[in-house]
Length: 417
Image (cartoon, rainbow, N blue to C red; front, side, top):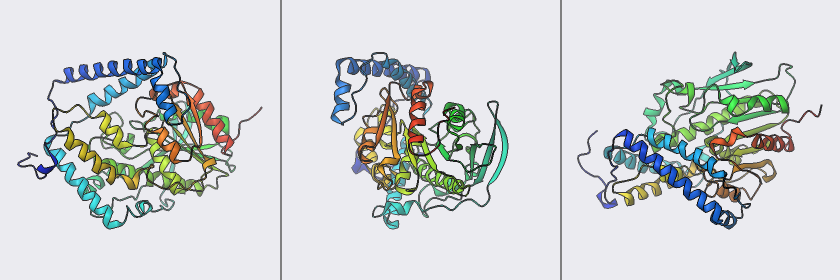
């Protein structure tokens, strides 16, 4: 696609990204990671980060200099995302501008800005669900599969493109159920970006929760992740990514698919029902505070709740056209309101909500993400751990906190024997 003319010259100069060899780009990304880590360490030692936490009424941040190691691991993860991201061409940027404007028009016509809940009709329990046995890191587990049946809004941009991916139209979920078939609490776990593979159960410590709390667990794979993407598990997914319209559809379908999973779980007569979401899964789970008000527990770990903020902070550096890109992000903020947990109403009781946050999180800095949702949710229980985003599951403390928070809300119980 070649751009012959600029259809919106009044918005300013088109963004242009410098063209550099891959090796140089990777080295530059690594250098930026080192500089940002040193900046984090300086802020921690001098107390500036603690003051920024205090300004948002958050608990005092850890001043442990070793937390910079957690931050550096996160920065290395950002190098990976930076190096493997597709930079939009000028023609693609113009296409995105047009599609975002079209999406806003569709949303206005559908009344989504007046009532964002119209964007999230309640799905019914799937009637085509199938269950088969699978082996999961030496443990017996099950696959639950069913049709998604989600479709983008009529006339929305990217609709045909999104619906053409047949791999994405089937929801797959890993299940851990107790063999006795007795009524039990259920926990739905929602994974983060770049997950959705067979080892997620180990990373999310699902087996530990299953054994310790006596809960049945189901872990739906989000759209365009793992086996739900055309290229298979080994290739990086396209959602979330540089196509902002696909991201809108991906978030919308994720919310639908998780709610459809919840509808299926309710047919199993659970004694209680909880949801835990991590990172991107935290974003999806956070929207349930407006949509699934009968949950006994809604808990999030290191949630990323502002995708536009993440995009704007982690886009490659521009050669020119920053003001036009900033304008695009402003329009994107408007387009994303119906799917934003920071814009949706909070209908679930505060006592059922809970957050687990990492002081050194650099992928979704708690100052910009957790703090905003925490205030939006009227400051529910929050537990802080001295780790980063990537190192979250390398420690037992967040799992200890999650178990305690689930049991405190009636989702499972710890066997004292």
